[in-house]
Image (cartoon, rainbow, N blue to C red; front, side):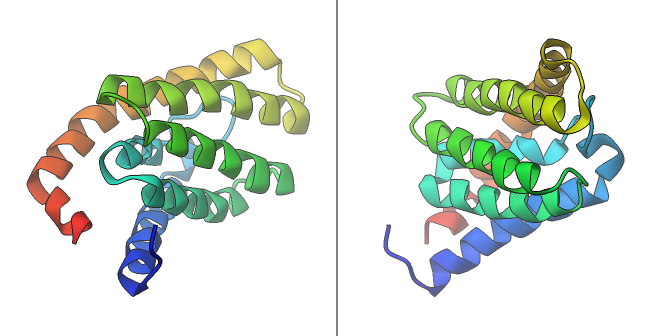
Length: 157
């Protein structure tokens, strides 16, 4: 991955969209029962590659600064998004791509919420997983697929 001003701009754009969506939709983006709509963007690395995962990671860092759970979420939660994005970039199809953010965030965010808020691990992981399923498969698959068909070529320049 050759780093240049165009790439930095693309990364910053993905980061900004993720952070803004999460913060604007804060009532449903944080907590034990969450549907973080910005997680629909975790499908972008499937179409665009690893650089999109980096943008998601940076956006998640900023978004988690507003979540109130401290460094464990700012660092740990954001790293979960980065790891999910890197796996997503290597998926064979969009349905496989969605599995990584759903599973990694369900179990990882469930653990963060367990450690920070004392919530029961398994039920919290279940609810986070349901929120991820909604964000990734119900919102993300159609929205990101259509978007990439319409304007995806601008990302590849």
